[in-house]
Image (cartoon, rainbow, N blue to C red; front, side, top):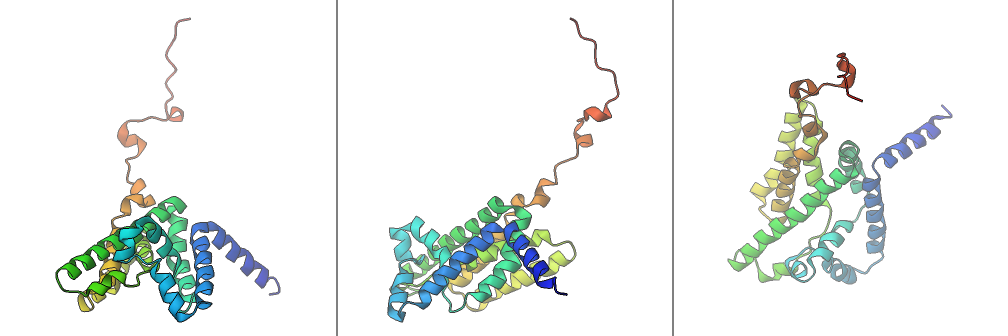
Length: 231
């Protein structure tokens, strides 16, 4: 029993090392969340709006805000994100590998942002949203989280995969029907982008036909004597 804390620490450290991107990102969010808690309310709003992927900032500094917005959260607590990253991001990174996991997260974050903000721009131009919406506060990591949670569908064995997929579509689809805000559209879009990332999964790589279907013979399987050669 006295060795339990040591074993727990060892296993926790091994888990964190197996998903370095997830926990480096989470550590960055911890630092920025602490920084936000030391800001005055007025300064906080102005500071975060400059790092927001709203229409104004996207038109001025698209690359900067797309990157910066992924390192700030619009909330009072960091711990829920620690739980969600451990439940979704870490397993996905361990399964896909860091480069492919990052590709899924980045695609969901960037494409869902551009699509949802494009829809908001259309709504403003057609009088369905106020002009002031160009400066709305839109930061956070939820689009990337939705995309990664969606790609994990292919990690779950059948028939549980279908239950997970149904729950995922209900979670992100219901607000799109009832709320119909641009962030609801962004979350639903990010989930669909994650589902479209199946080619990046190891399961997709295993669909290639085996050697005996392609006519390839391994040297160890070929017992014929080598052909004679001329000196």
